[in-house]
Image (cartoon, rainbow, N blue to C red):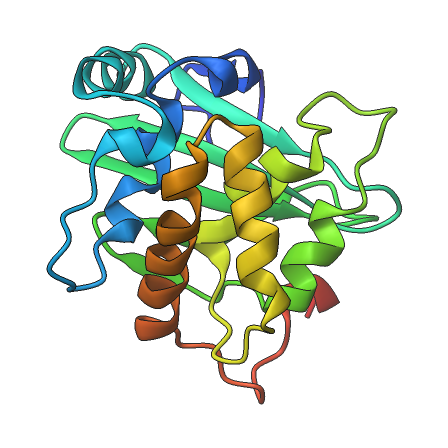
Length: 206
């Protein structure tokens, strides 16, 4: 797999990992830490610590950098890359824009979030517009969760919680923990939100 700007990395398609036990706790558990008294655990995602540990070895393998493609129909799509450089591990979030030959990195997660991010409306616009002709993730629930770390919107609608609960249920979160998991995720994202409405949207191509 080739993505311009990532020539040094042995990129591999990662979509097959999305259904593996331990993926979602690796991907989202750190964002459930909103400073509350309740400590997030992999069981919130229907997984356990052994699942999470086993899959982390796959996700953070320096010899194979998993890539998750979120193609969109007639609009920018997204790519999530596990950047497994020795001493510089992180997750990069890229957009590929119509009419452009390259991708644009808009955010990274290196233990903390940095970048422009997306509003809730932009996130859902990509989520709900899968390109069936392109390789990548087509399921809208999984697309929503993959893009969730990009959310930098202080004005998330009330419907966001229900949307996340439904998405978490699709990937195996138990019914009795899906709502609290969604609550913690949104609380964390709201607390570190840095979206400024005067900024140009990364989807504008500016």
